[in-house]
Each structure stands twice: as structure tokens, then as C-alpha cells.
Length: 123
Image (cartoon, rainbow, N blue to C red; front, side, top):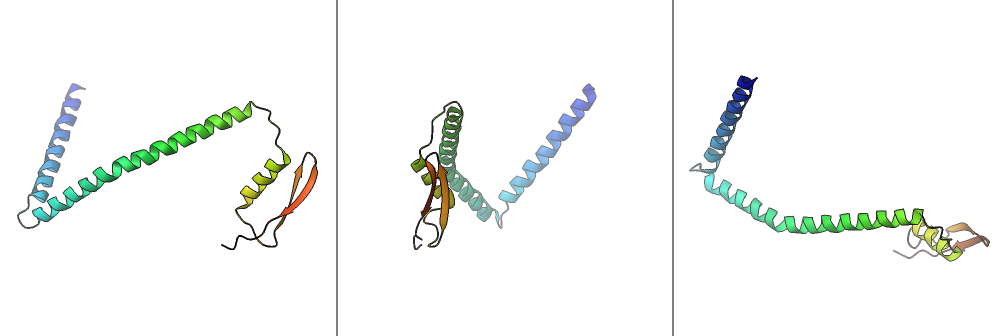
């Protein structure tokens, strides 16, 4: 068992050395090496500029998702009644902003059924 581990380690080192050698040959090539090194530098600079922005976007996204989950969890334990006005607004938001000129929807609340329609926003 010890011998297999040693052979795997030696093989890993050999393959790694070959890879490093090939990369050095690629970057230090007298004909095209300068251009290749410039491309590598440009990609590293670009990554250094975009990484903080991506981290910020991801942080805000995760924060908003956590806040939403906490709100959803809290709403499971509350028994708040929804007013008819809130219900109508929720239906409108689910159907999209504006709607169509001839669109007509029905909405039922505790006080009874109600019809509402909205005009096309002209977008």
C-alpha cells in the first residue's frame, strides 16, 4: 500500500512538472510569447476588476433571498387576514402591469365577488 501511494505521488509530480514546463515554453516562446503574456495579463486585470462586483451582486442576492425566506417562514405562523384591496392588488401584480384594454378579471374577497378591469398601459 505504501508503495502505491509513493508511485502515485511521483506520477503526480511528473505530470505537474511536464505541465509547468509546457506552460513556460508557451509563455516564453520567442516569436509569440510576448503577445501571449499580454493576453494573460489582460485576463488577470479583467478578472481583478469584475470579481469584486460579482461578489457584491452575489452577496446582495443571497441577502435578499435570506430575507425572503425569513419573511415566508414568519408568514406561516401568522394568521393575518387579507383585505379585499390587497387581494385585488395581488391579482393585478400576478397578471402583469397594465394588462390589456379588454381584459376583465373576477376576484372574490370576504365581502363578495368583485369585477375589475384595467386599461392597457400603451407600452
